[in-house]
Amino acid sequence: MNPPPSHINTHIPRGTGRGGGVAAIYDSSVLMDPKPKLNYNSFESLVLSLSHPNWKTLQPVLFVIVYRAPGPYSDFISEFSEFLSSLVLKSDKVIIVGDFNIHVDVDNDSLSNAFISLIDSIGFCQSVNKPTHCFNHTLDLVLSYGIDIEHLIVFPHNPFLSDHYLVTFEFILLDYKPLGKTSYSRCLSDSAVAKFKEEIPSVFNSMPCLNLTESYNNFSPSEIDNLVDSATGSLRSTLDSIAPIKRKLLKHRRLAPWYNHQTRQLKQIARKSERKWRSSKLSEYRSNWQDDLKIYRKALRNARGAYYSALIEENKNNPRFLFSTVARLTESHSSIEPHIPINLSSNDFMSFFYNKIITIREKINHQLPSTVISGSPSSGTSVNVNLDVYLDCFSAIDLHQLTSIISSSKPSTCLLDPIPTRLLKEVVPLIGTSLLDMINLSLLSGYVPQSFKVAVIKPLLKKSTLDPGVLANYRPISNLPFLSKILEKVVAKELCDFLHNNSLFEDLEFIIAQRQLWLKLIMTFCLLLTMDLSLYLYY
Image (cartoon, rainbow, N blue to C red; front, side):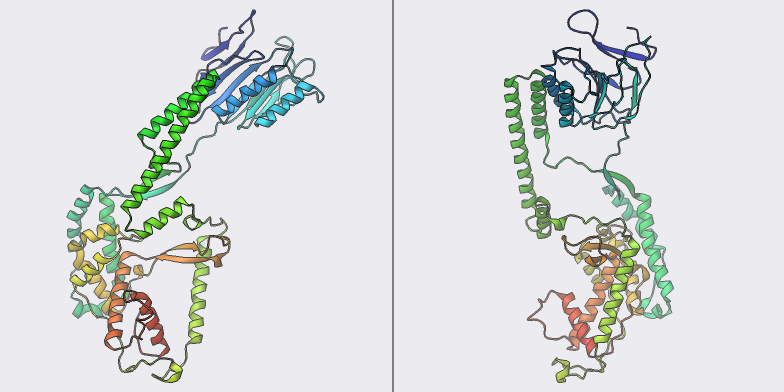
């Protein structure tokens, strides 16, 4: 048979007798690949592999043409059942067309009932519901598995062409969009870090040098904000010019870290044995495939165990990492990100958390006594308080103190930070003077820059069993910029020193460990509020 121009003809002739067989004619631009012939006594078949034009690595659609001759059907059901099972093992999308010579339109036909029951049990759908033969029977069928058949049309009978009717239909190969999420990151190579260290001093040297002990009163809040924004903006713009942020698509499915070259080879051997058994159906090949599969699974378990053993040994002094690893291995609910309903917006969370804070403030104000006399029974404390002592300003710190606080802080980075915290720690010797000016200007003026008050809020479900659609079941987790945390630590240290030097600390050592500075500070601060001491802190 000569196909039309730019078309390809694929034909499998009948094994015995004259003529017959099955064939397909398709456009040469279609990525069709004929599969090896499968021999069955009760029907003929031609299997074609249809690949996606844009995503050739995707599992192809199997397009199958079948012809069953009229006559006895004792072997057809069993052979066709085996045939369908082999197809669905090879692909999750299968289309079968052809002349089955089965009267599927006759309800009391035994072959029709057995055939319909078979395709239903495997998951195939039969789409033709009109006569396709001149004797008004439905003999030509379109079976589909895992793919939708659309716009199926049975054309009127044309006796000049055939005693069968022409059947056309459409199906869609959807464009593949890999599941994943988008991330933004920088490539901070050694050369990029070195170049940043080379350029950043000249950028900060161009900023004015401040004599804070004399001129801090001359700075308005807006000028302080401009100074801080200028410094952080210089850090960000300099790093952007050297190592710009790039968008990266993270694929949803990644190879397991313990999946190595050895396990990959064993998997290939097992798949090769499986294909050999499925093509020959010999019990010997099946036994070989099962043995190879056991070897591969055992090697995979051993590789996984060795990977986690090495990981635990390497991080044995990091309990946070160990607990998170155990949570992932046990699929703990606390390690799974909650699915926030789509009807809850960021503004809903912001309004809820804001109103919650306002409510807490009002409750505290109502519970505070109007006057508390020092040392009286009603005050519930034995602290001797000097009412003439008050904290009206903070003191400036030196460069050594600032460097010590920065180096001892955790290198956690917030989305609001101009540069990664690890990089900031490396360049502190180069820009420490400018950072010191910002911190001291805030301390001496009693003003916190606006950019230090902005936080990234992440809603966290209080318990995994709670309803994620209820706002009251969330608590806000705020991430502040790194420099804001540094200012907090400086203020906390000076405040604690003031309380300690003036004997304003309550004796809480038997409750609180000495290193729990923040909890002790909060409890003492609440105590001072109830005593109505004069404490000036502008925030």
